[in-house]
Length: 125
Image 1 (cartoon, rainbow, N blue to C red):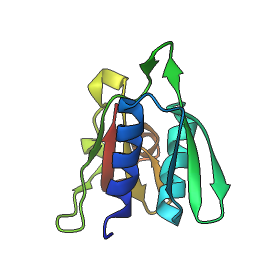
Image 2: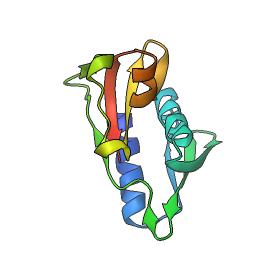
Image 3: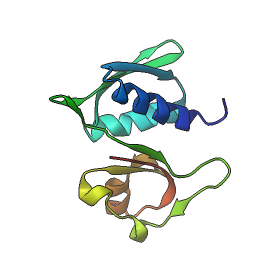
């Protein structure tokens, strides 16, 4: 497996489509940081560390999932970089973008407020 971020997003997307409450993903530093941003933005309940895997508790609003779509933007074959002035709200503010900045991974809104640009990892809504 080459793209562990795409694997994380696909596993979460598949678990949401199957209405699962938890999903296991591969434990890497970047995956942990992405899950930390999702928890801060209240898109997942929590995640726990199990040796080589991370167990993600998905959040639902009634029967509807909070996350409905995950899209990988910057891939290993084509990196996508964005300046702070070019960061726009996702789905009129209902979604987030995750950006890898010089200060670490953060949501697009936080990167824009700190005037930081970087690599646009993914969009989630």
